Length: 132
Image 1 (cartoon, rainbow, N blue to C red):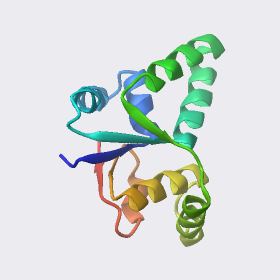
Image 2: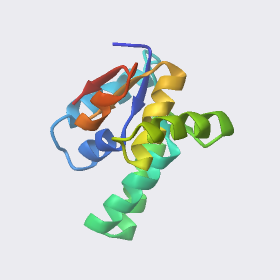
Image 3: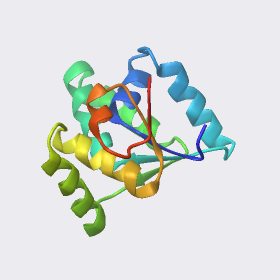
Image 4: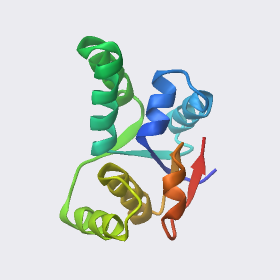
């Protein structure tokens, strides 16, 4: 397992909803608690997870779910100019949503492995990833 990971929104949602891959996400969080891995989460992943959960279970439960993730031993990465530039280059190639462009570019910029459930990431050159 690599030292640095980026969790995609799909990995976070898998954990929320106890979908396939939830156990792997929980294991990664435990490893981060033991300082065995560093986990990054893009600001846009938290935003996506927040609105997805609000639609499914309502505002109050969404807030609780997001607060749980924010209490994980993760580094939430907020936007900055270099990252915005990299995300735009990925988005310009086509094939990814705006949010996924931000998420993939974070993994590329940090050299981290992306943990996800989305086949669309397979088309990003140089992206190291593991699909749940």
